[in-house]
Length: 75
Length: 246
Length: 174
Image 1 (cartoon, each protein chain N blue to C red):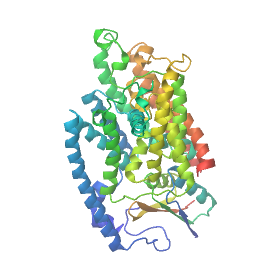
Image 2: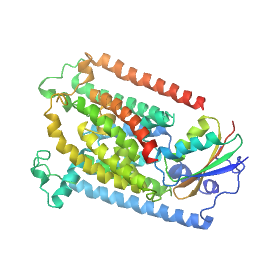
Image 3: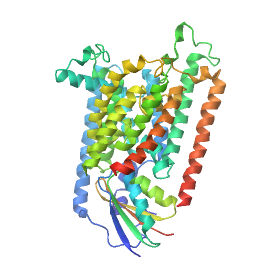
Image 4: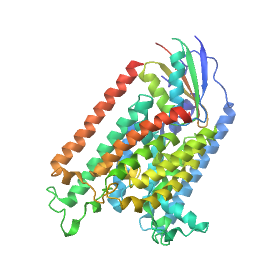
């Protein structure tokens, strides 16, 4: 049950999602990925995508305009 | 999922960036600033009204566009880029819905002027389709080239025209840079236009209006809404397929 | 998550993001509200060339004498330009939105790639919008629903461009 963080602060629109997809591909089932973002598009499209493929997702607003997206690779 | 008090995903304690006290203070500052800004925007609206007879109204709608785009995370660029880059068609579908709703409104506005049977078109009151509500404009090779390079530019810079302005307001320095070059590009474009318009291959000046092209409002409505519906279904299927594959 | 329980009113009405569907409905309605009262449809890029021309005049270049401007700069008035007003409105409306949601943050440039992306992207959009007589709003969002063929043609073209842009983004700007 490894935990990995992905720093996507300052990244423009599709980049957080693409990096998230790539990172999760390499992770094992049960692992948790925490994505650090500050893009309002990403705080919606990353969780939306992760949920659409069936992962467990939580969003935490950690600072003004900054979020942690916590994704558990469930399958 | 994220509304429960206790997290369901086991992880090391939250990456703390600010203490709760710091957060509360910063949030109060932003909220207060927001209220001050709101008041200033109202005052600015009153000023604009003195410069333009419909100024306050236009201002209100412009603010509405910005507020809506930001709050709903709406992004035209993403609607076109995501199907290819990430496999998501949520925004594509949202854009199609917006197009369909706007089409209903424009249909009504236009039909009132053209007549249900288009009989007013071409008469004294309505000689030219470009006078109808909506941007009924010339279409040609220039549209294809222009759209193509606009699409490249929007995806590369991380926002289209409305998206760039929206992100300027959100605080993205990248878009503050992009707008400068967007303006520069517009100047270049304006200089190019007389040359483009002189070329019969690249440009022809007549708009093509679907009700005229297709022989009436009935075929135009069927084609327009039929196509939008078909594209919605396609986007829906494609998005689900991409999600399932992963 | 504690904050959501502490200030539920603020959370619900000022912070929680709206659905895309809400965005769709509001954008369509606002666009219609605009054209019904003013007769002019929502657009974004129209004024940009004018602002650029005004800047050139400011630094001593007589752009108004060019065929492109043909004297139009002399009579240009920002507040009389509906599109200019709505453009400013978009910036400040978005600003107000993030402030009230306490989500405002200045996102600084992370690497030179972002700068080049903004430069190149901005230039391409500026030229493209003039060629197509509009952008994703003026040549698409208020053209296609107006039953104008240029809206459909622009949509196909911009989709194709976005595909190419996506590959360029992955290769050079990520």
